Image 1 (tube, one colour):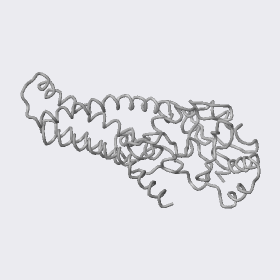
Image 2 (tube, helix red, strand yellow; image 1 turned 180 degrees about the horizontal axis):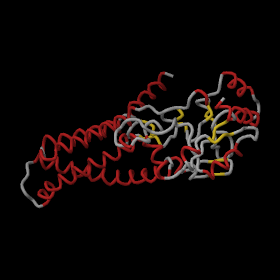
Image 3 (cartoon, rainbow, N blue to C red; image 1 turned 135 degrees about the vertical axis):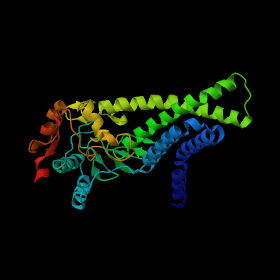
Image 4 (spheres, rainbow, N blue to C red; image 1 turned 60 degrees about the vertical axis):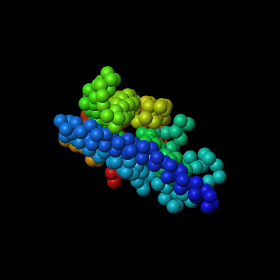
Length: 321
């Protein structure tokens, strides 16, 4: 047990290595740009970009993943009932019974209620268990080793801003350092320290610019389609089958779910995402099929149709009592 505990601590320490690599690269870029090259005419703009990048990066790293609320967790009585069942079919019936009181519409690939045995809870829509974080994460997108954190409902906006400001920083550095790089390429004399930092800035900035352009482009497309990376790789299942576009409720509303209704907050790494991460509007076609996923004695009301046009929230009637 002592050896296993020591190994677990070592793994936790090693998981911070990518974060330290990104931090070291950012600090060296700052030193090379500000101290060595000292491009005074560009310093104000650079500090704005670097400050926003740092703010978004650390919010992405240190914002804990949101987990499902207590209503999705099995009570002590339900846990006991569930554990006492001898057959898989009996356990499934218990989960179906409990899920009638919850706004859960997605299913596993086999059509069963999505249940996390580690966390002992019924998973809300778009929630997945992260083996690295050892918890269920609301609207989980992916686990990012460069952040040593899960990207999900609580920090997806911060992650997008981190990519955006990183790309902006790289673009700005490439544009302003290029004259030095051209002089170096043409064989003009530059001190050895300046050569080193020019080469480092151009190499690292170009490498990250290419990578970030590809990554940010993918995530911008995912936002417009209202999909997570997990849903892009594997479509969510409903009773009627897999439906990759079930949560796509239009470009405007898709963007507002991530960035919120107040546009003045969109570019700031402050939480402004819409909703609670547990209940999501469904596309009208998917919503019309969803009640079949639950027993026929469950009654639903249309909560959001008058406010959000084509959006439909489906909740059990009991949640309004």
